[in-house]
Image 1 (tube, rainbow, N blue to C red):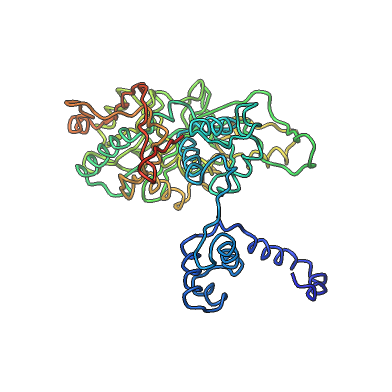
Image 2: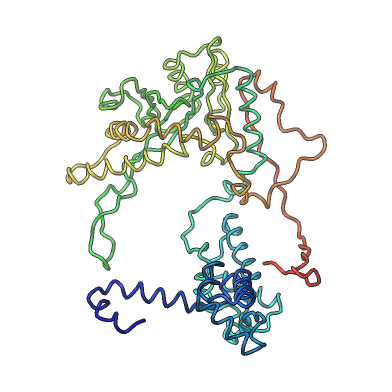
Length: 479
């Protein structure tokens, strides 16, 4: 830093960081610099006798880095031979081994088994397995790497970060695999080829729960104090909401399954015109309610045997009703079911519509509670709140993005990369000779196709063979 610029820096304090950053850049160790351009710049400088800055500009090397290389050559050689910087002998892992650790951490997180504190323990175990001669004594005490090493490792690998994972059931983690997805798309494309339906005739039907007590929205409160409370009911009342959308970006009026035995017109107050209300004692979907929902779909889509539609649903037990299946056959509704526990990735409503829908619904209920502090939300109000949230969330852009993200329309069998199936690697196995996925023609003739769950197999113990190292003589141990 030049002293005559001190007055300017005092008048403009923000320039201090720029100057310090430049000084830090010049003081970076040569081990972080690509060796090949530095070696070529040094050789060109020695052979041609050009200026130091000219050589640095030609090979894009910093002046101080090339100057350090010249001083190192004079100290350890004749000043004309390039001498690389000595590696830090106190490093626990080599650069290649750290890359292995980083790749392993990313892969294991995609398999839903990310390492919290065990990451430091794994680092110690890996150091012992690699035979590192620079394991610090502090590691030996607790049999894990220190926090200082962990923070330094994370700073050296900006591709890694610390995040709070989302919970997922073991069924969802293992069911979304390549076999199930390929089976679904085989059935779906077979139906599309056989019936040649347009996007506006491809529908997705799915249920979600409406409750009078939802997770509160965030509020402004004092920092450092306990979280503010919000008044709500002690026990919640629930009902079922049935959303129906098509691949053209449109929705048909929803269905509400109301927990009542007797009908009251106030149940449908404020709902979308054409919405249907179904009474059930507990407000849950069952075979009879599903049949009435199919009748609602038939009334709104005008489907028939000569004008068929494809209806994509999950394979819940409430959908396996013989009367409902016979109704679909008689009225031109081709049902294609999703594999078990894959709706979070394969169902358009779950992917892009129900998330915003629940957010808007929470906001509407919160606003009502704040505006009416002495009035509690009842199940009579849920259809009106849900209708307002549905209009804001079931937009053409959200619906179309859901169908595109799942590969249903436009059809894309390869929408999911291999990394998406990492969590199910431990249970996947290839099909054996003579084993068939599904009798597609028979299923489609019955207008019902339900992809089977791929059989799982416990992973057998195995030993990974060591791969040759860069030199070809030593083996490379991976995490």
